[in-house]
Length: 313
DNA sequence: AAGTCATGCAACCGCTTCCTC
DNA sequence: AGAGGAAGCGGTTGCATGACT
Image (cartoon, rainbow, N blue to C red; front, side, top):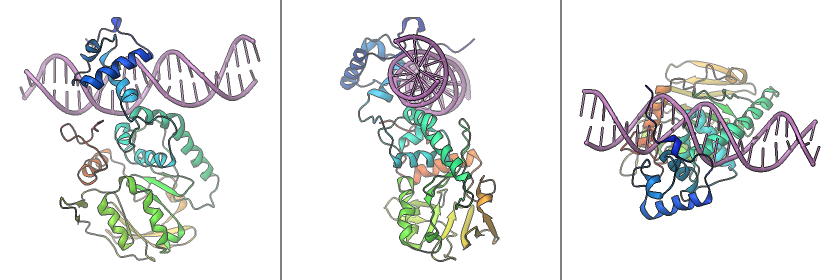
């Protein structure tokens, strides 16, 4: 026996909504709200529609402040970053883009952005002499995290987005501003504050949180001193690395936890198989997300439900 | 001009999660 | 505690439109 249908399929209208139906639904919700029961709503409104259909129409099209049309570069960046971080969790991604719906973002990714990224990736693959730490885009439907980079030297990986420049590695502080601009949208304040030390921190985990009085309670126990110029990288709590040397072809990273030092070339980064930023375990990602919930006010989680569910209002 | 193909997007489907009783 | 129902969510479908032949 299958699941009971949510409505009488034979007696509900399907397909595109007419302007009259839109007006009816909008007027009713403006006046009375949804009443917390979408299934009962169509009857109250006088629409021969499934409650689910009404809900979708309202959330994706009719509700106020919905933004349709062209996505900006900044929005592209955020979508790529979050997709790299959490996969196809469209509702969470949508929560970071005011006015955009999960459906919109999903469609945009599937029809345009994914191809755009793949084209960039292909272009970078053809230029091996170019500084390419990584470039990869996973297949369309997998929800596993990935990391890749675009043509502007912006890197998308599970701990956030950052821009790379050789001057950054050689300790030019002026590049740090642009470095953090891309991170700005979802970065924890405690992470940002690390900029003062020219130590770049990715990821949240349980290492740094804002305290309730607004001060930073930075529990990051292993922030390291810059070893190469002013630049070093701290990647998550479990993966602490710093750039200790940089040639035109290779980067020498020091793992502060193990004390090990290793060289990674562009080629090694190409598939992110052994990279220190990689987050392969979905459970870890969930943990990261729920940690962000307590640290990062940019994410609008509804505590009454689940930490990962996003409120629409 | 007509037919075919590609693309974008709104809407649907069905599974999972959450809430209430 | 658990059953049933509703909401939430992501994958998929199908239609409208435009581009191409």
